[in-house]
Image 1 (cartoon, one colour):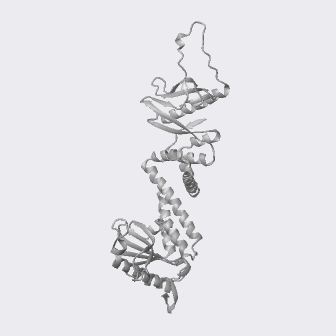
Image 2: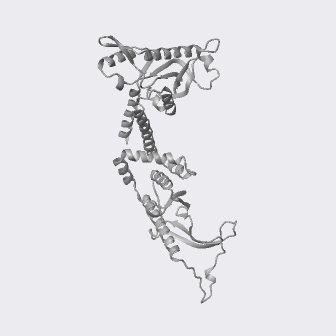
Image 3: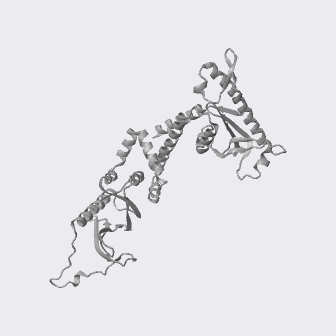
Length: 399
């Protein structure tokens, strides 16, 4: 059995990998007792229901012989069924008479176990020196012990050569941790990551999440179900944040923004109510689907009319903005969210450039319409997800 001291990120990966494969994983703790010594977990050599033999190793800084970094004590213990293990009374070897001796026999398997674990401790000390405070390690059996020999350069080389596969594997391992019965050891390793490692880990996770969203978009680029897209944006609100140059917070989907008559009918529900996280200014987002038409028939030889769906969505969100501004105090009186309709930003996400604007005349008609709008931004689905793809390229370049 070997005991490897790993950097924090390696420890997370290997911990999750061993658990995922269903192997029994044991922790090995070493706790410093002084500036020059550290107590290690005892090594159980022999055990029955009421007796056992253990070796208690102690790591030391040996100034005279640096390689002689271990000493220890054999202890025979005894207990009743419901008791904890207790050391038997010390035997003072100085009281032995001439001709008397104490015999302690180790079976071949016990001796092999002891030697293997002591070698692991010697290697640990040679690599990391004497740990400070309490440090936990992983003990892995058989071929799994090879994992502890992976160095940082090997891991880096693997991820560079297998960037896509490496990110996917690492993402799956991290996702698996949420199902572990006890993830304390993983949390402990993550806490020990330095700031640069945390930034890189953040980037890895971010890239994986973004790629899942992009793949989902590619698989559903012609999905005409508006409720489906409502749920996608609700589950992944960071997609909507790509629309704005400032940080936003999603407050509510299907949010009431005023407009009811005296008989309590006709209320306006915007698809997403957000706010600028810094200024609290309201942000209104209305969505259609990627298959919603942007244009209709030709008006002249080189100009197309705007579709009724696009013009209707534009007027609709303009009306939402008006009612929110007029009825803000009534609408917000029972809400705990801090939001201000200083000058609400309005966005309509609709249609697809790729599937509809297939020639320059169509693209010109669309651009003339949306760029002449005041205070309303029109964004197509492929433009929105194209920004996410660019973000992935930038983040991978950062790696």
